[in-house]
Each structure stands twice: as structure tokens, then as C-alpha cells.
Image (tube, rainbow, N blue to C red; front, side, top):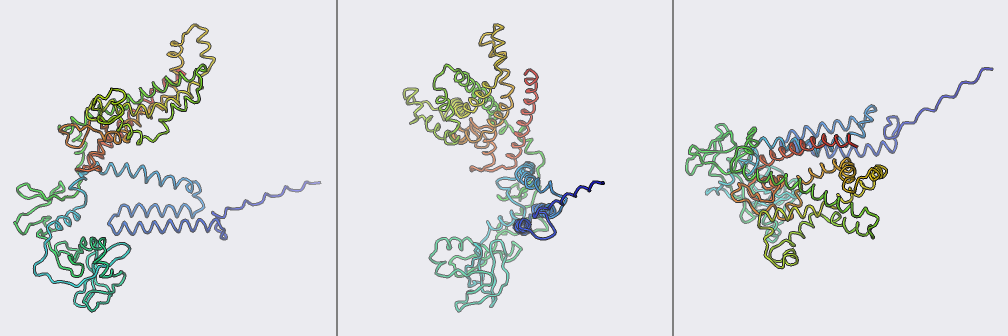
Length: 532
């Protein structure tokens, strides 16, 4: 008799999160999450458009469209898992590197921190004076979402504005005192609060509300919190001619391709804007004599610090690993725990503690180990380098102690026994067998440790802030500064003049140097693998 056909397999049920026929719980959860993401994305786009940041608005719009397509189509299943990681990679790696490269080709820094329109506004504000025959407007301080503004009564019309938004006419109610009492879309701050609250007083005194989009029209300001007057600048901006004229002296400052307003006699206004300068920042690194000498000193010390940190910490960790790998040593577990304690202690706290210990006046290093001699560890360039190198070795040798301990225990015992049978002594076995086999597994870690020490900002900054200072350096560079801390000083984040363009150029140079050294070192490790 003919056999019955095998039953067909039941159709595979589609996930609720991916289903389009019927609405499941998973689909609703996905819909809610994507709704929140879309809301934040649209908010970001609107904010970026309001700030004239078209690049950010475009990137956000593209990412939002891609996310919606990926999570609401059937054929993009792999991208559903890859897209979040790709977005974070773009935001925290690709974008940061690309923006750093962009800044490296500009003169962005102190005096060149904004666009030309921002430079014009800042310059005119600096020259503002109260108009002698200016009308006095009854006003009220208003607030919306934490932003303060001024509302005035102008010919029975309520007008309101903020430092970022010129005066506009809105619906409102004018009180018996002549000042607005109700302003559409705003909360009127009570007069008593303006007079008694120091924070509100300070905010009101700092308010400067432009009359219009033309910066030459001036702005409203208040001194008493109840009336506002017009302030105009003694400087006049001519957008067509690209000049700013000082009406008190008649001096004309013309816009230059260097991002400054400069007069015929070479005098420049203090506020400029950032412009593209090409490879100028990279050329300054190698051609500016005042900058080159301190940078060469910092670069040499950076390589010495990174190499010595790796070699000394590796040697010390290997020595302790060999000692405590011997079964004849008692209490090995307890002693190993003691020796790895520096690795468990936060690096910035250790650097601060050693900073106090190396102090020449009250530090325990001089009191205990040098019989109270006033050795200036932090003020002498050579001693400061030795001290910070000691701190970094003390912090990093436990890492190598752990790595070498594990590597020693993983060595093949039959190879060592064969070497002993062949008459090899301990030193010969260590030099010809143990060390090469150790380097096979530890060489990649040594390369990464070199890169870490090359950019070890924490120890340098917390221990001595890169000091002592290098005499005559154009920036606040110190004898123990490495390239990463020198970049921090040049950027002006810690104070002083800022040169973000030069700092970004140096960051790219450091990235290329570390990448090239790492690539060459990894190629050399292949020879060790061939030996193994």
C-alpha cells in the first residue's frame, strides 16, 4: 500500500517585534521606543536649524531616517543589531577624529572662537554706550524655561526679546504703571522678586536685548529693573564693505583673511573669527623656533617616559613573578596580594599622595629616606622626572607582575626539563627559553602599555601638573610634560591663551606617531611567534 505523505512542518511564527500582520506586545514596545527616538531626533534637528548648524541637522536627519527604515522593514535584520554600535562608533570615534582634523586646519582659539557675525556682535557690544536722548521704556523682566528676557511697553504695544532673539511684538496687557503685566508665552517676574532676589537682579542687569537683526541698531538694557533704555555702539559695521568704523576716532578696521579686523596702521580689534589656515599649524610645529625647542624637549621626554615606564615596570614585575613562582617561598598568596595593591588603588589618588610625599618642605620622602634634607623633587627638572617616573612604575609594575605570573605558570614544563637534562643552567634556561616564550605572549601587551604610557595624562597632571616650567616657552609647558599634557596646556583648557588649532594638529601628529610605532612593533612580534 502506498505510504502516506509526511505532514508538512508547521509554518514558523514570526516575532511580534517584526510582525506586520496584527499588533503584538513586542511591536508596541518597539513602536514606543522608536517614537521616543524620533522625538529626540526631531528636537535635535530643530535646535540645530535654529542655531544655523546645518551639518548637525543633516547628519541627525539621515541617521533618523536610516533608523526608521532599519527597524520598520523586513529585510534589514542584520542592521537591527549593527546600527546602534555603528552610530556610537560614528559619534565617539569617527566624528571626534574628523572634527579634530577640521579644527587642526583653522586658527580656532583665543580671539578666534566664533564666526564672523559673532565677532561683529561681540565687538559692537564692547563699544556700546547709552544714547543720550534715548527714550525710556517701562519694562518688566520675563522668564520662560529658565531664560530671562525684557518686555517693554512701546506706544501701547508689548514687545519682548532675549539676548538671542531681537524684540518682537506679542500679545500682552499693560498695567497702570505703564509696564507689561501679562506677556503671551512668558511669565512676568514680580517686581518685588526683581528687587529682592540677587540672582534675578544679576540676570536682569546682564540682559542685552537687540532691537533688531541689524547690530548697528543697538540694544535695550536696564539699570534699575523697571525701565529700559537704548544703548548703541561707537563702532559701526558695514556688511557690504566688510569694515568696522570707530565713530569717535574715524579709524576703519577692515576684515582680513586671517579672521581679524585690522586698521591701515596694523592695529587689530581684540575679537576675531576662525578661518581656514591650511597646514599652518602643522608647519608651526616644525618651523616656529620659540615653539620648536620646548616641543623637542617634551617629545624626547615623552619617548623616554614611555619606554622606561614599560621596561622598568616589566622588569620589576617579571622579577617578582619569578620570585613568587618558586614553591619554596612561603605565604605566596598573601605576598602576591600585597604586591598587587598599587594596581587596585586609583592612579589619580596615588599621584596626589606621592605629590605630598615628595614635597621638599613636609614630604615624608625627604624626612624618612634622606634624613630631612630639603631636596627639591618637584622644582628641579631632573629630579621631577625621576620622581614621576618612579610613581608611574610603582603604579604599573603590579600589572606586569600578574601578567608574568600567569605566563610563567603556562610555560611547557617538558621544554624546561629537556633544557635541564641538556645541562642548561638557570640563567641559560631563562635567557634562551623562558624569556623568549614570555615575550611571545607579553609583547602585544607591552606595545599597548607603551601607547598608554605615551598618553598617560593622569599621572603627569596630578603629580606635578607637568612642572617645573620650561623658561621662555610660549605656552605653559613644563619639564615633565609629555605630549598629551602639552596639548592640554596649548589648548588653554586649564587657563591662559587657547590655541585649539595647534593643539588639534599636535593631537593628529601624536596619533600618527603612536600608530606607526605600534604597527612596526606588531610586525616585530611575528618573529617571536615564529620562534615559538
